[in-house]
Image (cartoon, rainbow over all chains, first blue to last red; front, side, top):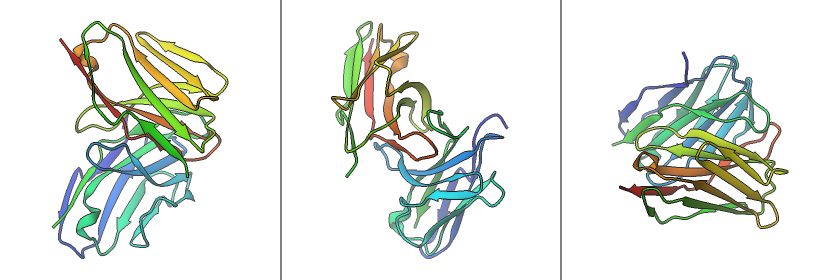
Length: 114
Length: 112
């Protein structure tokens, strides 16, 4: 596709369930980023990949959060044993990689934990 | 710790005036500074990038300045229009294959 695609757009689940959020970046983009964004705030860094390698996961809140990009393209952000405080907009972005490259964002996944 | 500050209060200006948004940072040495626009319910959209050795960059009605001594970037929209109303985010890019860090954004409202 022409842009970054995220699925699902909306996810509602009960506390304690696991969820998997998917990101399909722009074809050929080396770098892929995951962010979490609260209303009225900027994107909060979670983790990022160059190709299939996870370069930095310092923003993941705790060990319930994990991400993978096994073939250097599609990425999955997984949250285990979800809690209400995990409710947020999760955004993915991709870039050509290296410094000074613009990030292209998807429209995000709105996660609601009941 | 690294900190990026943007005006947390909304900026309201009259149509036709120049809007100026500020991005200040501490404990950071970005190689690049990027500006994005975000509309409600949508992801941020890239606008402009300026390098650490550049003082100013222009694109149509947009102008960005970058002062690495003051650790500040200013983002200007000249001849503002109601369609410019959005949240504007600055982002610091350390260069290489390092992460990009976003500010909290400033909401701009252009009043007809």
